[in-house]
Image (tube, rainbow, N blue to C red; front, side, top):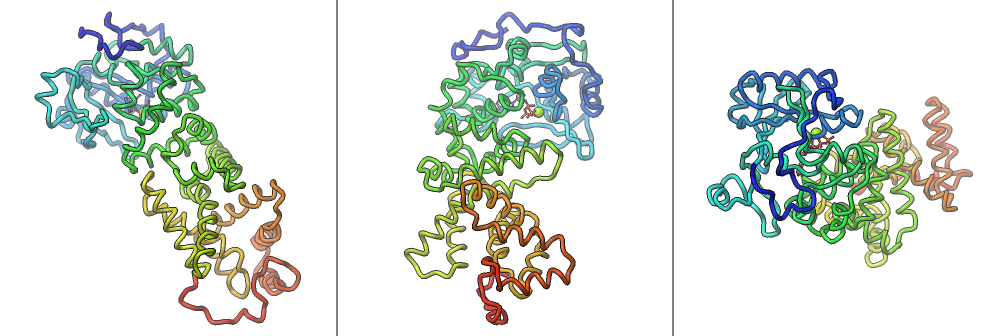
Length: 460
Ligand code: ATP
Ligand code: MG
């Protein structure tokens, strides 16, 4: 077995070989493994390759949880894997992986990864391994032994291998102990491991909240000082990480920890700045409430969209920007909105690449805030028919909830009006619109101006 890497003195893969948990010493049973994952494990094994369930699949079963997905590790190369499965797609540049596709279920199969610190290998692997000037791994396609593979994994609890050949669990980094002590511990020297892949800082937090574990002292220590490494992560990857952190039922806890470890700014720099300056009094409670609602919805198996959260993060900063623009220019309210939106969104996109389909929903939710306030004539009906009405209305409710909790009741009439409007029949709705200007402060224009022709500037 190879010498222990001198960099990896804190928690390294054991040089004495793995601890082996026999079938009666661990709870991993085939009944907890999906039939598709079992099929892949068996086919690899029958074809003469080593095949292990690894990562979250083993970890979660050991913790008594239901795994989200099943990852498989093998000594078969991607091409060999492709040769075994007709339903196999090879993907990835940074990590070359095989996806075995069973309808909507995808089983990820990775070839054991090897090391980069072997100079001989480094010379020969111009095409398979690459590091950035910051020490970040841009490509990691050197294949190796199972021991090397274990050492390249992130946390000890993720380096447990369940063998389909003998049903034993092979524990290379004391993961079973850390599972029982509920510790998130990086394998190797934490600073080096964060430099290789700064996303591991985010994963440490995500696993700590998801699994209700503590991050070990050594793993925690370099996070704040290593946080700026996240600037080098491509915005598309940060979007993926954003989804995992904010749309899996633990958003409030993840948000709290991301801020605590100075990581949040790499997702939302504009928001972080406003939070630090305390320049927007509703911003913090608004974000917390939006995240709380998202967690509740997810935990009650209701649908959520990331667009709503982006809208919630950016609403008050955009309002602030509109205010600033109005002070220095004579833009119409609509032009001011679009200018402010463009500016704040432009900055946001430098951190997280928000796919177009979500961008348009974010814009709809924000524009609807203005539309909801304009109810005269046919406007309320048109707004009511808007595809994103429900999200826009929910967003208005949230604004009202947060602002009224701080003593500002400006939105109360508007919220009550829309709540009632949705419950009434068409005749009553028309009546509601007609009586709008008479007594209620929410109508912006007098009924007399109602028939003014629409201009091209209109957001309708
Ligand atoms: P879950 O799927 O429940 O989020 P997981 O641990 O299975 O958790 P995946 O992202 O599916 O996470 O990755 C599978 C395994 O691949 C991990 O358990 C870990 O061993 C390894 N891995 C994933 N990302 C990294 C990384 N950035 N650095 C090192 N190893 C990683
Ligand atoms: Mg997984």
